[in-house]
Length: 249
Image (cartoon, rainbow, N blue to C red; front, side, top):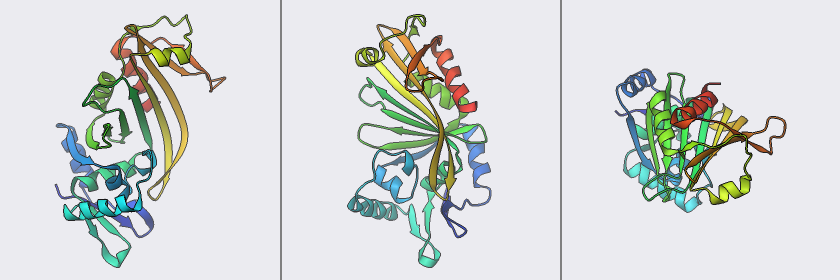
């Protein structure tokens, strides 16, 4: 598929999506995953994709090289008037769907094995699908589109798992996280947008930590947001339902 996006004249930086693109891609996702390729931080920054969720802005030299690389692969073309650019192909689809989202789930994990991502972003779409970004230790961002249910399944399989810990015994949070075999911080943030700039709003955190085969789930105390309190979540389905609630609540 040769899709493209470009900065709109009335909303600088926003994606101008070709008519019928969203419907066509959504229909494809409901028949199976749509893989949109792998990109570096510099390449994503060059097209203003997912920039506000990245760790650091690349240097100007890195951005220049990224633009050359994208242009050589015909994924980036100069648009009319010299002020717009066209982002083509699968990368254009990724940019278009990212700019449609108004919520992001950001999950970061410790205790990964070689070949696993250390961070996953989920950006839900109105059509009950999600844009997923998996980031590995080398900084490669694998981007794909999945149904909402499949996205939750993949995320749950990746997060720490274990039998439910005793909720009645509040753990020492620092000691728990230091001694955990695998732990994750899951943050769901609602945001608005001005052009391609995301403006963060309300966010919710969830901490999962597996220690001695038991899964501890911690959430922020509504009365004392700086304090984490235990929640009882039963098994994979419980974790899945808890995260689904964050994304649909």
